[in-house]
Image (tube, rainbow, N blue to C red; front, top):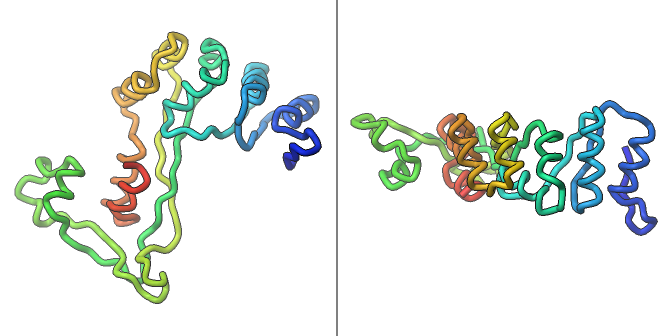
Length: 204
């Protein structure tokens, strides 16, 4: 593990160069912030190293277009990137004060499940925290992740090479069964892990 110190020129890029000289099997780069770091990380992946890193983007598809914006050649991205996970943290409902309730029709419409429930919508319940001393009256205690995953198969790679927009890449991934951040969050809300409001706050 190497702590980055830009003041002494120990940047992500310089640290990564130094690490590569030691021929590691796996490399974790805290964050790809600039073109130089991105280029070295991609080259490391192309030479047989398993590289993990982070990029600040709104969703998984945008990470691929962000690398193109950082002047990484699309064919190099398609050859080196195996998959992209977008992740957000949502608060977990406090178990000490969790309560069940029947959501209003406006909530069901927002979930796009009103038609699926049919005559059972009055029996459909969600959960929320009432607030207690344990959670300091917030209704939440702890956090959990919601995520979406894009695996770069031949179709996605082809879209990357053709410099398709993040929306086009996202649509292609959805057709292949990708669950969005919001979908994942709604599943956890229905399971009673978090609330609808929390999911909408984080994943819109």
